[in-house]
Length: 532
View 1 (cartoon, one colour):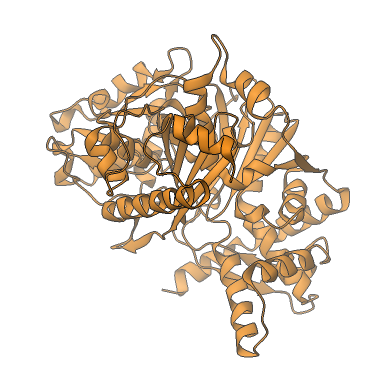
View 2 (view 1 turned 60 degrees about the horizontal axis):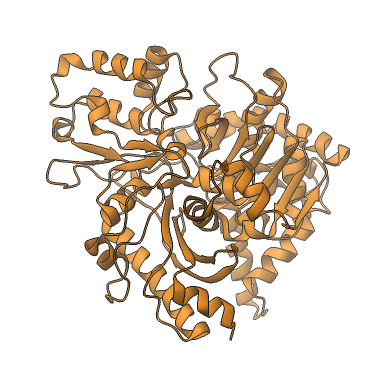
């Protein structure tokens, strides 16, 4: 038994980070040296109901409770202690979407996740109104689309937030949000570190004819930056998190954060000229900018770091879902012929084989569009595989094709940043399921971005680790120490990482593949139109 860790748990020198991802809710318990002491998790999936990608709020709490229960049991088994108190707690979750409540705190409409692409008219009108990129998944786009659709619930809205903001509100009673997550709800003024006042006024003027009983600023959460306190766990919140009644109330909580912000923290990529890519069900890149972009790009969103610095975000709805489905097909093949392989072995073998495939995938093409993909103009998707008659149809090329296409849409957005805007980046840090197999996902991403790609050991814990670090920063930072300094000097001072430098032939092959990918979008469109 680790007696030092046991003493820290007993003394409350620990922080808990919980992140609600698209397929898993994960909890990570860290000590004051940022060492992982215990973890817990719960698997879940979004549902497509009445054309809306959603999660039910009762599933949110069931998942959080199961995750915390597993973590608590791990603590009891490892350290022979009950988890009674903590130094602090942080909540992170998928950004964006639409969660609205009335004056009695009742949910007014189904939760719309980031995955929904139903706000095209609203987003386009808001881009024109603000002269600022407003993606379809942003909360303000969902709100305005509800207004355009004349939904009855809109007049009853008294609070609108993100998933992390919702969970934090129920645990603390505080209607607040970290600036990184808030920047995916409504544009942020980088000087004031809150919502842009002029854009708030423009929005209110735009909807004035509807005579709603609220102004936009009144229904948005208060914006906080990293390091600020965001309330404490209430008695009701403690019961929600831990129905066993063991956990005490009064635990400090940091500002709730989005998965993009915690990904930046978990990979130490909040400095200018650094970036990170998170690749799982969806994929997004975050590049911290030296200056504003010269114009509005529909493919590039502007958000912030948890400290409030400008970030170019390229977000794509689809990444590994179709790839994982193909791996499951191979698993069924193995089961049919009684070939005993664990899933980790199957992924490892297939991914490593992909690296031996031809650099341009030998004439194969696929699209991983399980849902719509705004980067290429699709409101719906159909997973699709197609090949030339005289292609080199091998398993290696097949797997390489699906790895390439997982990053195809995000490459389009980043090519705009690097080629049109001349954005410079020194290194990109990668995290998420695509990078679990050593070097494979890194090699593909390095070729896609033509940039060195690093994977850190802590990246395996992802956003749950990142939000736990944000809690520790709030509790244990030195006076005047910035988050960037805290990460450099304290959290990642001795961090180990593996870096892959782009191979020129891989880069060239990826470009050939992307030419085929762009031309083949007409085939994907035909599939959407024909396959209902």
